[in-house]
Length: 124
Ligand SMILES: [Zn+2]
Image 1 (cartoon, protein in one colour):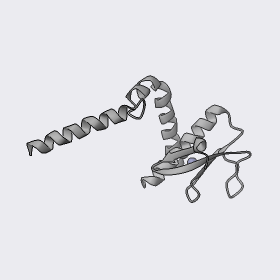
Image 2 (cartoon, protein in one colour):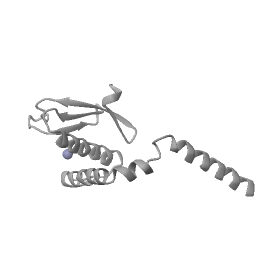
Image 3 (cartoon, protein in one colour):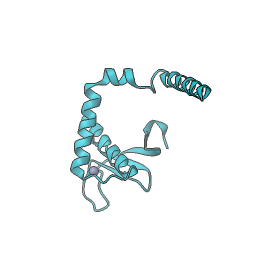
């Protein structure tokens, strides 16, 4: 599995592959597929970049909904994927600034949390 094309969804690493003329097992053309049994996500290679990104999010939402045991319809998956893309696209600056996984800030939060826990233990 190529780390560059791996996407982790709820602790499962999926291999992202771009396939020409992507089709379902029934032979119907489709833009994307997620195969849970193989931990693979396929995206049609010929899609435009925006459609590839939207399709990737569509498959990610499928992955999340299955992992957490929430049954969503295709329409709900589509709506949530467009909504997530919109939030990311419209709020990049604040999302980057608030992301605790950027710039080592998560380490800082962990230290504060540990110090707080020790103080609480001292009082008890
Ligand atoms: Zn779908």
